[in-house]
Amino acid sequence: MHRLFLSLILLTLSVTSAWAAGINNIRISQTNQDTRLVFDLKGETSYTSFKLDQPDRIVIDLKKTKQWSIIKLPDFAGTPIKNIRYAQKENDILRVVLDLAAAREYKTQLLSPTGSHPHRLIIDLSTKTFPIAKKPTKKIDKPKVIKKVKKTIKPQPRRDIVIAIDAGHGGKDTGAIGKRGTKEKDIVLAIARKLAKLVNKEPGMRAYLTRNSDIFISLRGRIKRARKQKADMFISIHADAFHRREAKGASVFVLSERGASSEAAQMLADKENAADLVGGISIDDKDDDLALVLLDLSQTASLVASTEVAETVLSGLKRVGNTHKKHVESAAFVVLKSPDIPSILVETAFISNPAEEKKLRSSSHQNKLALAMMSGIRNYFQRNPPLGTQTAQKHIVSRGDTLSTIAQRYQVKLAELKSNNGLTHDVLKIGDVLFIP
Image (cartoon, rainbow, N blue to C red; front, side, top):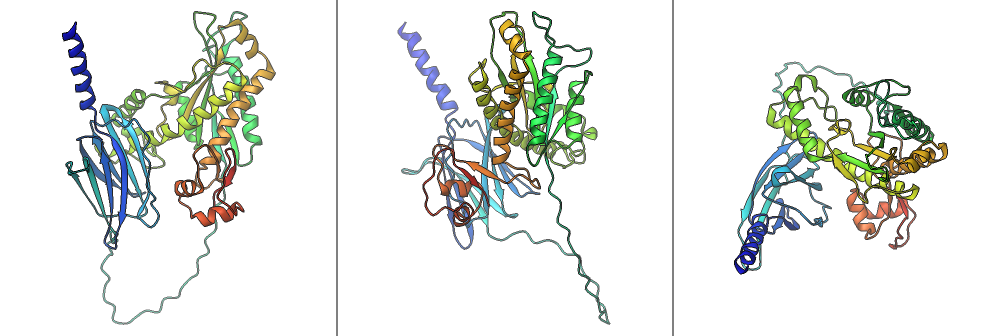
């Protein structure tokens, strides 16, 4: 018994030490010559790093690293760094992305613990930017007089935020069927139409229904339709079913990491058909390593956005009725596999539950479900309006927010933030709405 207990302790210690690496803190210092970032690490690790442009980024992959806690970011004001993002990847890799204001030369090094200092990763950024190569000009004996023509640049018209609403199943695919003969395909289409009306009433938004009638569309066909419309968000609506009739409650799903990885692999295998896939960037002319990085970064950003809107939608559904789980779930649903469109799947209720089937047939309950989803969509885009859209950027104050942290998050000056909102003090209340300059 004592030997077993000792073995369990040793096993626990070995597992803990194996994944001890992580980031405890990030420090930043600025001189006339360069900017230095110091990552204080929880343990020994190894890493790889590389640069990307358009936009300019430095990507660092920390190997055998798990990040369990939120990293407190330093103030980037006056530095070439705009923001630092990070995400836990498969194979126990922590990916850290440095968003830069312009291209920078950089050097990295790992330092072992000394005195009170832990393991550290140092990133030094040079202040000079990379010069743009100019073509050599031919010598001209006689200078030519060139008349300057004034070009008037027309401002680009603001576009609407496009919400792709996908009513599940359809046509020959009825979906789940309730005890009273209620077909899932009919219920979700009714909810989708109600949600589309709410979206179209919202200033600066436009709804697109992947199907507006009882027709069958393949799963990947739904994604293609959304991408053709250049959708900013994809929301798929379903009604769950289970062999136990007492199962109840709504659920909200985002794509699992396993699903994202399998999709990336499939796209890499068929790059010729994946042109203009990642935010307008074609991957068909990139080598496999770069294409995979582009897909990975796009999927990471899309999943972060999907999770944020999913959590808001789930909160709204909790006010309507029961939820099957208290948190957002993840699964490898095909309709969630677009790497460049934030996507969520909503299971509105269990149609196999007679009580919930009755509610799903009710027009008033369908309206409540649509309103809950609309609330999540609205809140997300108020915080994160896409470039070139009509929606003014807003921030809803939550617990722990301060004016300085909000200004840092949106990369705006504190004085401008206060002036834009007519604030003469620094006191904020939870629920306050701030307009971002």
